Length: 406
Ligand code: PMP
Ligand code: GLU
Image 1 (cartoon, rainbow, N blue to C red):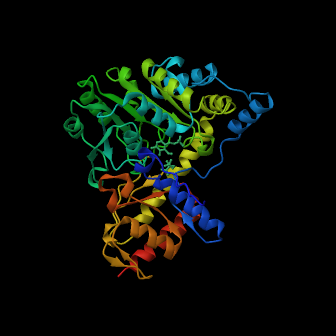
Image 2: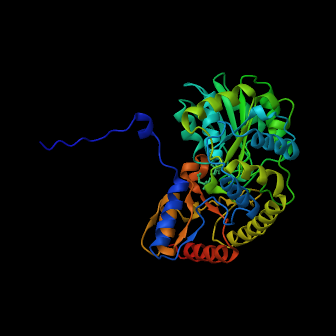
Image 3: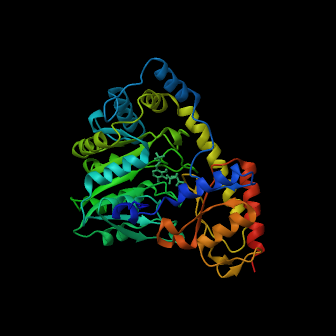
């Protein structure tokens, strides 16, 4: 008999969309492998190599036999290094016991959300926001509550808007400054004002996703909410190697959290991944303790590219965009193109159609803004983590193509 078993997936797996940022990255990779001339503004990852010192530390650890299981939340040395880094750079006081090292900032976020959110809990976040927060909240059974923002306010929400979004069901607020996808950030006073609002809601915890903390431009200052006395006991600070150390493939992230939350995260991690890869831990110590020159070198390069991006986007017809302040993204409003027809005969009926037509007709990849929520459906995201010559060529192609829409 020829019976065919059709495997079915769980409701949970079926309910979640794949990450659109990673989907674009995969598509660009495949097009390049096919020999197509593609300029990729899609991937949110630095184009630099991981600093030599960090690589050497990992290689030395392998050669010295550091190839066995390590403690679930990381070695004492690595947790100590994270605690020292947070004290030195962010004015956050936390003991090594409060540190959990996980497989990328993304998994740190996932564990933190799983550790705090029960079905029915609300999680408040300003949008547009990175594509993975909402699915993570929903996988925990929580409700993702948006505070919609627009480009006019640099995509920043006011303290009043935060106050209005909080309900008795709110358990968590997530902040991501500098922001993916917006490329804007809160000034220290704005962070203080938002934390003043949260201080009056004792049940509400705060996740501060600081993965772009080192990439800030124009002399701006980053303030960690975890450094403020009113929020120190309720803030979960998340960071990692990916962005500041150009180490996206290493999958190393870290969290500093109140002890109870750190323990819960570690317990979940013990049943899920056991730990990060052993020999990345000495490399993490080297990165955090010994690489400030490397970081500054990359930051300066991104700062120059940010200025270049801003001036080139200024030449695109009808496009507006807040100037980039941090991270390596710009999020222009391209809705001027909507309801027009491309030279290839495609109708541009939204950001997805814009990105699709642009990629097919010019070989330039951008991420449509829809999955970043809020007003994102009028925007596309460009990552400027690519060489100046590619930025110039890509922006020129976009400008010319937009001019040719009819
Ligand atoms: N937060 C934000 C806002 C991000 O853009 C990313 C990018 N991947 C992450 C967290 C997680 O990064 P990773 O898992 O590579 O550390
Ligand atoms: N954070 C990066 C991005 O937004 C990497 C991909 C991902 O994890 O979403 O492109």
